[in-house]
Length: 180
Image (cartoon, rainbow, N blue to C red; front, side, top):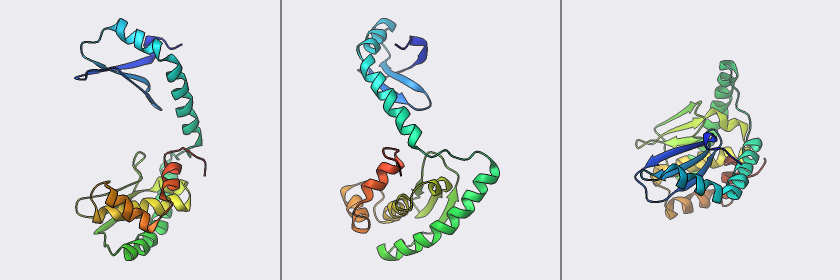
């Protein structure tokens, strides 16, 4: 059983209590500003089984994710490799989709594998190199499709699926729901 010292409470303008398990922050309770400590304790106690299961799921997911290198040399090598691998993929899939990115950059972002700016500049994390070829292809296709659709609408995912019908498998890998 968790003690209240092990739980982060975030008060905000909300009406209900909510639980969340974060890999870095642990158990988080989001609570209305008016919620008292006893109400929050009772809520946590009532949901202790859920907290235990969710904590286990998060730990399992984290254990399946690749370990990111920390040293500057390793990251630089990964960036170099990413540039060599991703650039040809961008060319290939851009031609297939009939789009042209304004710029392609490799970053060391840890929380976002790729992004597309409003000006169609694409950014890719070097840490993509720690995932399968299919996952890399998916992120490239995903970001290129944002040149056409600047959202995650049905039309956007239909365009992604037109190039990669099995893209959901790659999504699951990137989210750590399955091993490579």
